[in-house]
Image (cartoon, rainbow, N blue to C red; front, side, top):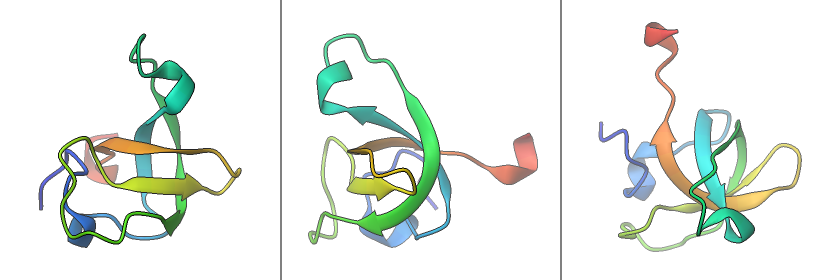
Amino acid sequence: MNKNGQYRADVKPGMEVDIILKKDQRTGERTRGYVKRLLTSATYHSRGIKVMLDDGQVGRVIEIIDEETE
């Protein structure tokens, strides 16, 4: 599994991820949450798969959080 969130097969609903919201693209500020829905239909996206979090925020996955490391 690739943890950078560029492959749709690696991102699943319920996973904890870090995303970058559209408004934070310049600063690179991350937002952490749980995936509610995948919005990118392509199997790969160079800037990350676009998702909607449980709280309704939408952004591109930049890192999949590994439960075993926390």
